[in-house]
Length: 530
Image 1: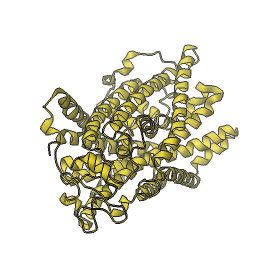
Image 2: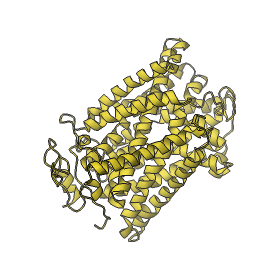
Image 3: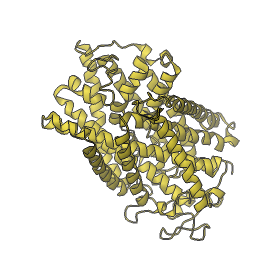
Image 4: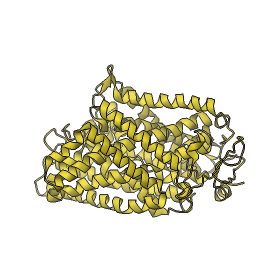
């Protein structure tokens, strides 16, 4: 039986109460491909087209949010080579996206990294690949909510001409409770399924893209008029990543640039809900990455031309503004329209907060479906055809993580971004190498197979693996990131190791509680040839 026919016929889960092929109680009958174990989950099939998938992909990346949080730290790490580092960060993303596309063509399954790594490497690595995706998205959900809180109070302060309102975000209790409100609202919209998600995203994504282009053009105009803060004439050498003085600075910059591109793979986690699931998700991922790359280069160049990299009031090297560049630069660049940038970042964070739920919820759904997680995670809302229980759990854990980090960290945004970069490198790298191994039998059968199924994902996966190890080692330094540390060890390192080890411990707990998945009974290891 082909997976296409399986997906079309199945609405349930792959295991019955006795542990054999069938369905989870209450989910309806399901059809399983006996050769692979793959089956559909009961999601709303055919509800998203190419445009909708691309818009949700851009929303999940959240360009306004990622740029305001990362332009400063990236400039601090690599100086004027920021466009070049963005280019380097883009290349592994593109190479990995090509590998993702090939895996999706062969196995359009909402579990993505979890499912594909399990099919290629077996249950243990597959489980950790899924865990990496879940952890990364939970970390970024907390970060998104934090940025939304900051810009909510900033926008209110601008609207009412009362700077004191902006200070409310510094109150830990107010900050955490406001974050909870954002989290609940985003969870509710995501819970209602892809149709509601798509409708909300069109307006929010269009608004932030328009404002970012406006900001960039205005900055370049200010430079041309001679009124830029610290004018830097455009230099083609900015695109030379090899001009970065040290490899550690290069690795830190790439880790940050990988963070700003992260999120495009949400288009793949929606594959069971898209029209033409074998082709639409991959095309949407490639289109998303291309659009975002062009936008990032435009904003980076404009910011450098206006602000420079010095430590002055509006310089990109000023530590006081690095955590929130647009909050500082919007007024001198956009004048009375600065409030639009605040609204753009707020809408970007809120939109991405909602769309980012798609990834972890569907990964946890797949892990519950294939019995790698408790069966409760496989629950589908009968009304909205969405992963109801998994969506709620993602919200609860993300808010809890944010609340803890808000208390522990000197700069929660910087530390979570750097931790997120490590997690992204981990699970993207595992998935890219899974592509190479899964298609090994046909890698040299044609030039197309050699490039898309072997060379591109191999190079992308190796680059991410190197960046992961380098960042992990560097983050031991207590001065890494915000400078927060526990016992002289950097908080970013502690977070990264804790999250990975927590996954290992939980994996062994699941192995003891329900060994069927780890025996290869619910999702089978194999290759593209069988």
